Image (cartoon, rainbow, N blue to C red):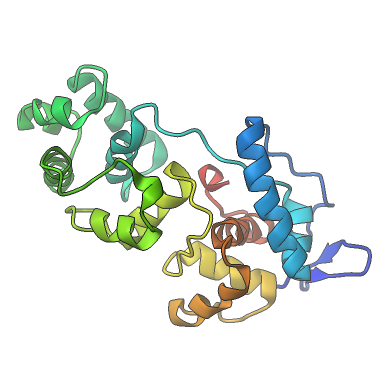
Length: 245
């Protein structure tokens, strides 16, 4: 299945696929500053490629999701807790972890909670070890969650993956959604690879190695393209995680 461009701006997919008309998918509103910044990036990448332009028309604008109320540290705690768990179960565990930490997620508060209390909240031994490592490294300064605007994406990711339980993909999602970096290209994400294959008619979907240079024409807005790859999966297969929109 491929989302193809037509002269009238509407799209079509391969046999058996029915897509909604442009503008029929609505994603809600965000603040003016965030909307302007992201909207500019969306317009720019759409102007560079007719397939992407049509995908944008079909899916509608993507928006920033709210940042963690507990800051960058809280966002990373959430990422670790949610690994390999269904959303509701992970949210329940996270809620109990927050309560155990006294209502606020900070490295100091989390470090003070006994292992038994965090295990009782539902954390596995591996995730407990990951949160302990994250807290310790933030507290001793080996992982720096401040002044991120002065560091490159690669520098931030390289720092984050020194934490147990944080791999490249987790670091990339943190960059995209918590820091709102616009030029992240998560080539190892299966949904991005599948969505790119669906939109541009590549079957089987491109491997991570092949997908890497395919993002180059969209620099410095590859995060936007990645998100529309997820949208392609949602439109053609109904399988994208709504939280990634």
